[in-house]
Image 1 (cartoon, each protein chain N blue to C red):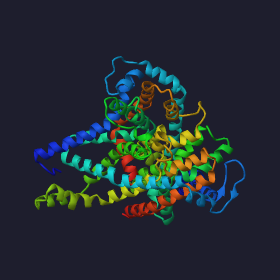
Image 2 (image 1 turned 90 degrees about the vertical axis):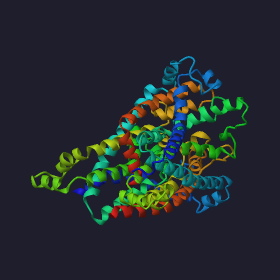
Image 3 (image 1 turned 180 degrees about the vertical axis):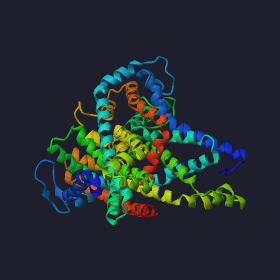
Amino acid sequence: MHRLYLLPTLLINVVIILVPAMLTIALAFFRWDGISMPVFIGLGNFHALWADRVFWTALTNNIIWTLLFLTVPIGIGLLAATLLLVARRGSMFFQVIYFLPMIIATAILARVWQGMIYSPVSGVNGMLQRMGFPTLDPLTQPSTALIGIATVDLWHWWGFLCVIFFAALRQVPQEQVEAARIEGASFWQMMRYVLLPGIRPTITLMMIMTVIWSFLVFDFVYILTQGGPAFSSEVLSTLAYRSAFYDLAVGKAAAVAVIISIFGLIATAFYIREQAREFDQ
Amino acid sequence: MRLIESRATLLLTYAILTILLVITLFPIALLVLNSVKPAAQIIQNPLALPETFRWDNFTRAWNDARFGTTMLNSAILSGLTIVLVCTTGSLTAYVLARRKIKSWKIVTFYLLATTTAPIQLFLFPLYFGFARLGLINNAVAVSVVYTAIWSPFAVMLLRTYFLAVPKELEEAALIDGATHWQVFTKVMLPIVSPGILTVALIIGLYSWNEFLIATTFLQRADTSTAIVSFFLLSGQYSSDWGEIMAAALIIVLPVIILFVLLQRRFIEGMAGGSVKG
């Protein structure tokens, strides 16, 4: 009887995710334009990607993105969370504001940054240029486009981490903190030996999630630059999307999707191990 | 927990927190400020306060983004998704919280694993399959896709609520002659209703804001969501940024009002959902 309760969730999940995922893995070995019969070409799609400069740019960009997001937002989030712990009064207010960008649609945040900040015509950037500052629109320069996009994502993301770390910090056992205080620990010693070790599981989990999410990043890139200029800000997910729906190279898109998933899978293995540990408690 | 009492440290703390606050609010303030300014004045200075209030930015945005239709589409899509996720999710969460058998564990880990699967891994066959079945531009089909993607999150969150219900309550009802179904609907659901409300809020927010799936599956003007029509409006070359910011504010305002009223629920739901799986 109880088994039936699982049916709706599992059925939807299998039909929407599992079966199409299997088909994608199969499609990676075919040439298919989405309409005619797929043609089996073995590793052809992967060979083509290996020789494709854009693919390597996209992969590199994903790796840069991962490294950036493993350090900057986690660093700012931890700093802000500990400061909230020190401040105490008003911490709820600060927390709510820091979280605010997370509830606004990515499409809207992207356009606000694009039009109101980066744009040389309507944005703050344009105003600075007219005042004589040599600022450029980062989104239009191949060397800075990715950083320009990452800045928007960082800005909207770190507050979420701050809230999570703050919640975790407050659960560090009071006795440990008291004991360290009686021993005369300074703030930094408190951080180093009590607080950070206390929230290590949370930090680890967030780092694993960061790796997974960094290979999924799509919205901000697609909206802000579409991977341009000259593919300089292309990431794997926009490359796959463009291949499937613009170039109608669905097999190639599937191959890229499989490669994204391999990176995700490695991180997911760690993720599930962490979760299993929590689950057994 | 007072870590440090020195005034200088406290001052520095608040200074840094305030700088971060300003950085967070700056783009959002620009959104609100420029939604009531004429395009020409935005180009002159996006930071200046409005000289004249252009309220017609909002009426033009409403008409050009066809919010009459697209907001309704978004509301219907969000509503459908909320109902689907809450019903299927609470059933699954109840079972996963109550049974401690090996196969339930496999189900749990399977669901966890799918939350980390990239959308591109299933998007392409799904799209071409839906196209063949005539399910493109169909809100119900999209809400099923959303349900598949977000129900693991809902299940994990609701599971913690079900776990908190004492087992004796369920056993007592069974002894009194209630069926399993009655126990679930009459005893369990009312107790976990705060959890269901949280899930409904978060899922509503996610589907209201979602971009990738919506822009792929809802292409026709009369089926697209508010976010997609905003994206198309703001992507035109002859852009009136006053109008675009007004359109943005129309979409964001209901979300912000709900967030201010129910901040704790939002934060617990979103942060808890990803920390605890």
